[in-house]
Amino acid sequence: MGIFGKFFKKKNNIEEENKIQEELKQKENIKEEISKKIEEQEVKILEDENKDLTEEKKHDDCNCKSDCGENCACKNSEVQKENLNYNSLKENKIEVKEEKVNISERLTKSKEGFFSKLKNIFTSKSKISDDIYEELEDLLIQSDIGLKTTTKIINELEKKVKKEKVSEVEEVYNILKKQMETFLISENNKLFIEEDKTNIILVVGVNGVGKTTTIGKLAAKYKKLGKKVLLGAGDTFRAAAVEQLEEWAKRADVEIVKGKENADPASVVYDTLSKAEEIKADVVIIDTAGRLHNKANLMRELEKINNIIKKKNGDNFYESLLVIDGTTGQNGLNQAKEFNEVTNLTGFIVTKLDGTAKGGIVFSVSEELKKPIKFIGLGEKIEDLVEFDAKEFIKAIFEN
Image (cartoon, rainbow, N blue to C red; front, top):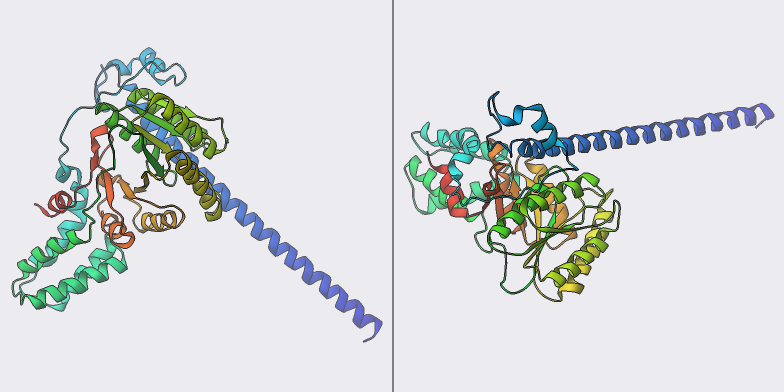
């Protein structure tokens, strides 16, 4: 190779290297843009949560509903200014009313959406055929029940129909109703709360699922039952999370332990459990970070927290609950799988079920992870966080 050949080869290598560097730079820019969008989305979620909380506070003085008229006291600018001042918030204790929630009414969207279509499959057919199973399969998948659980439901339904020699389409519908109940774990659905000891409830979940609000509702419920409740603000990476939990502590009239912003969450958990021993708390509910940069960080953080709890709690049982947004479908199931790998979950709380026309996430989570659902969220009020009962849930969604 002559001198010119070497020169051009070197030049080509330099150009190729520059091209690679440019591509790497472009990839980094794309990563930064994606991260920025994720952060903007999380900020919006937090703003929405705080807005909901503020709206609820705004109407406290007039005892009205959120859709009050122009003459309502909360329309007055001076009252509004006072109520919206977060730092000068007056003592606001929640009064939990013993009100029986009509689950069927709260699940109207699910009943009018997915389950009305489900019944239509059977009422529109005069005889049992493969069409019924095919339409049913499509509908179950669309309802967020997922392919794996749907396949099990269809296969077992076909076997049952053949075994019992069913000939009427209506009978197939009734078999399906009973069968779907078996895909919901009916044991250990209640929180394990013992008398005369400190009961620990660790709450995990991603940002935006209603985790902090759920903790506040649990605190108010147990306070109403006469328990001494203590909250631990373990989500130290989000200033808004600590502020929200502090607000709920005031509203529920319970104590809270919090650390400085970006403090080690495990240290806050340790301080919380030490405080629980000091005041002889009956129920301790601990919040955790909703988003860490990757699965390894999440695993390390939850491992540290669990180790602290075991150190302070010994071999005693404690609840580890994942909060899932019922409107997110298969994303919620994927979140459940991720958290189940990094911590020993004892159950789930599925929120916002009143706001979805599907609701199948309840079945897929229970069936695929073999863990019970402890509570479901059916609205904004304290009493709308309802203990889950499989029979009652099936009855509610299948009834007219």
